[in-house]
Amino acid sequence: MSRSSLRREEREKKTRKINDSSKTLIFEEMYSFVSDPGTNNKYQKSHKEEEERQSKHMCSLSGISSNMWWQKCKAVLGQSFNLEGIISTAAVVTRDRHLAIPHITVPDISWIDWVELERRGFRGVIFDKDNTLTAPYSLALSPPLVPSLERCRSVFGENIAIFSNSAGLYQYDVDGAKATSIEKSLGIRVLRHGTKKPAGTAEEIEKDFGYATSLLVMVGDRHFTDIVYGNRNGFLTILTEPISTSAEPFIVKQVRKMETCLVNYWCRRGLKPSGHNLLLEAMQCVKDPSTL
Ligand SMILES: [Mg+2]
Image 1 (cartoon, rainbow, N blue to C red):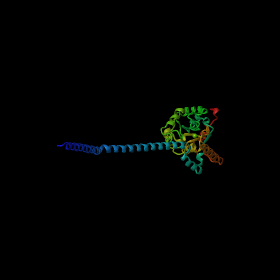
Image 2 (cartoon, helix red, strand yellow):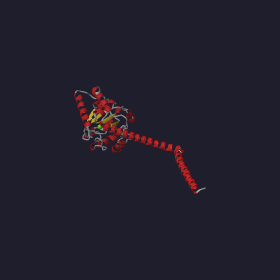
Image 3 (tube, rainbow, N blue to C red):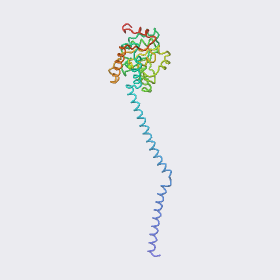
């Protein structure tokens, strides 16, 4: 074999080798792509699942956040805006005006002779909180009222409670935290309930106290909530003057003025409160605090 033919043969061998290795590389590349479809699909699937999971998580977070926002909004609005109250007020103004007239009006609870009330047949007392026992939103009992509340507690024992449109209302005090704070601060239990005054019945209160509402006294500072609720459900109703209106929202002050104007006008025209079989007895229980 000549030298030139040997060189040609070597070149051909090299070329074959290069071609073979290229084919192997291309095949391996192709094989690697198709050899484990599961891995690739798994990757794509898990990636997709992760995206979906994150998307759901974000939706869920945004749902929770918007839900919490709405709950907070309702709580804030609800303190000043009482839809049931508005509907009830419309019914009282047009039809049941007598429900807004208290049986007894006093400057504050220190004018009430609790001993005499008990002696004449009453068995328990339900208080509104804001502006009846405390300044609005305060946890502290108004100092001038301390002796009177002590006397009330000593006479009626466990048969006194607070029935508020904020603390203890499931809608705005979901976990009962406000109610618990007030109980600790004032030493009076706060009734948990689902309906804002003046709406709702007094069945739960009657069960709780073990007495008919005709033997219970409802004390509050608002005609169209505390007094309407009390009269509609058969309590003896006592209206107090508000402790302080300075911290009240503007709208509440205006509504309070409107309520007072209306009720005073109706009373001047001879409107009387709803009947109560112990009213004459109860009238004997209002006294000057200096004599108590
Ligand atoms: Mg009040």
